[in-house]
Image 1: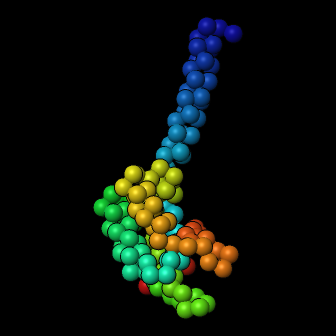
Image 2: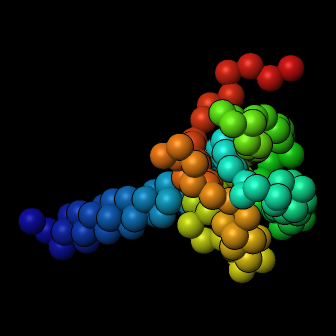
Length: 136
């Protein structure tokens, strides 16, 4: 094989390797939003404080540009024994954010954990990734 052909082949191989690495890096940095539904089971007497902390979480996450403005809904309901629970639905700007959450958000999560209790075999904080089917 001539030197010119060898250099062209080497260049193509290097381009393919670096192109592939660049493509993989781009895929890793691709933003993938994730909608979550969080159920909170407050300890008796901590319902009002937990509602305040849920709102603080929303406001802080919005200020830090970690979540999308919609969908967002916070609901309150009652389980057996008339025990209050909350459900918060929102979308992380990227699914990887919770794993690398800023200290300010982790601090709010600590507050939430202190205000909830496991109930009927379910955790005090229950997370589920969900898909929005219909939003009007």
